[in-house]
Amino acid sequence: GIQMNADGETVCVGSTVSGNTVELCGLSGIWLSDCKNYAVSGNTVSECASHGVWLTNSVGGTVGSNTVTANGADGIRLDTCDDVAITGNTSRGNTGDGIQINVATYCTVTGNRCQGNATPFVESGASDYNMIAANNLLGNMSNACAVVGAHTQWSTGINGGTPNVASAATITLPKYTNYIVVTGVTNITSITAEPRDRMVTLRFSDILTVTDGGNLRLNGDLVTSASTTLTLQSSGANWWEIARCAT
Image 1: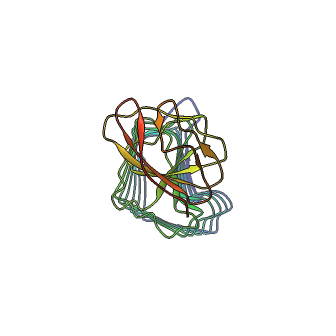
Image 2 (image 1 turned 120 degrees about the vertical axis):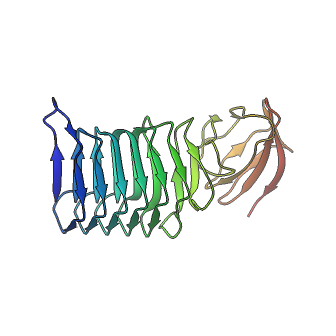
C-alpha cells in the first residue's frame, strides 16, 4: 500500500496521493498519519486486508473521487482528524463501514456513494460539529447510520441511511433528521427537550417500554416490538404523541 507517516514530532504538509491503483495489500491501501493540507484523490483501492483509505491524527485535507471496494475493514476511515472534506467517493462491498469518522470534528461528508458495506456511515467517539449531506447510503447490509455529535448536522436529503440512537432512561435525539432507529432494550422515561414543533418518528428495533409521564405526554405506556414506530412532536419542554404503529 501507500503510507505517509510523520515521526510524531513533525507533520507532513501539502502531501498529495492521486491517481494510484492499490490492490491486495496486507494492511490499509492508503494510510496518512500526522498530515496537514493533504489531498487523497482519484485512487482505486480494492481487496486490501484493512481499511481502503485511512487517515489518523491529520487536519485540513480532502478525500475525494476515490473508489474503494472489497476491503477487509472500513472503506474510508478517519481517526482523530479535523477539518476533512470527504466528497464524491464510492465505497462499495467493504467488510466494515462504507465511511467511518471517529473522534473527528468540523468534517464534511457529501456526495458519496456507499453500497454493499456492513453499514454505510458511522460517526463515533468524541466526534462533533460535522456535516453529513447529499450522500447515497442505500443498499448496504444494514442501512442504519450512527450519528453521535450533539452539533453534527445530518441532512436526510438523499442520504438514505437512517441515524440510530441507543435506548437509555433518557435519550438525546440526533439533530437534523426526522426518522431515527432506537436500538437496545433499556426502557425510556424521558427524551431531551428540543425546540418547539420539531417532529420525529422513532422506529424501535427490539422490545422495551416507553413510559407515559415526565416530559413524555403519551396515550399510555408503549411496549414496543421490532419495527414499532412512535411519532412525537415537541412543545419545547415536552414531547407529545402524534401517532403510534405496532407492526
